[in-house]
Amino acid sequence: MVRLLLLAAGLFASLLPVAVAAERDYTETHDTPYNNLTIQKIGNVVELRARSRAGVYLESAVDLSDPLKLVVPYTQSLYAAAFFEPNPKKALMIGLGGAAFQRVFAHAYPEAILQSVELDPKVVELAQTHMVFLPTKNTPVATMDGRLFVKRSKETWDWIILDAFRSGYVPPHLKTEEFYRECAARLSDRGVFVSNLHASTKLYLSDIKTIQAVFPQVVLFQPAGRLNVIAIAVKYSAPVLKDQDVLARLPQINQALRARVDFSTLARERIDVPVTSARSIRVLTDDFSPVEFLDAMKINNTKDH
Image (cartoon, rainbow, N blue to C red):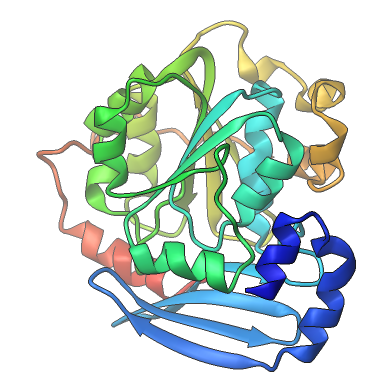
């Protein structure tokens, strides 16, 4: 609690290393209606993991000596959104985890709004008590289902980020054409939709085809050596994103964010969009829940995403 109060007072950066050194390592487990969670501190690093029958996977991590460091590589890749909309005024993130994305966003865009939505109240609690996240009027958290929030929302967002893994997989109702259309309806005209996908699942190509069914343009980024693929989608057809050098957009991105995200490396993470025209690749809908989804869960749950 003392450490959190220091953060709120603006003294966190200078005094935190002393607090970290004095705090012992620990491991805690928490069972909730949605997750079996483990939160563990070893040295300066706190990791949040979720367990399922197939294994344990990493949800989020924070380096207490540098809370703005993006420890989990794919979290940096989510910021590829800044290549296409560098100055978001309002953003919506479905999924909280350990709030790594939220801490950096609040630092880089102190005047902007980042609304987070998290289903599991225990995740919200642990982010605040163990992972140095303090919701503010500009970074509120709603504890509810992400799709329900989008359906009820009347707001327009410049970024919508979907990173809602539950015990290693994205809930099926957050992967359908209908849900993506609900998100598109809440995006500003030049807004960006971002989704964290997993390239090893049997539904990966269907994931992309489903996003393409809603958004005219989709580009992909994949962190080196990782199975995560970050899909970036927009509602407009021009300018053509694939014809633009993302590095040419760097001057438009503010220095505070560029100090925390290596955009030169991020630009090299861009990959080709796979061909999804085969009839065997199905668009995912609310009425189509393939048996292969169970296999996707098994694969996801055995990998850190």
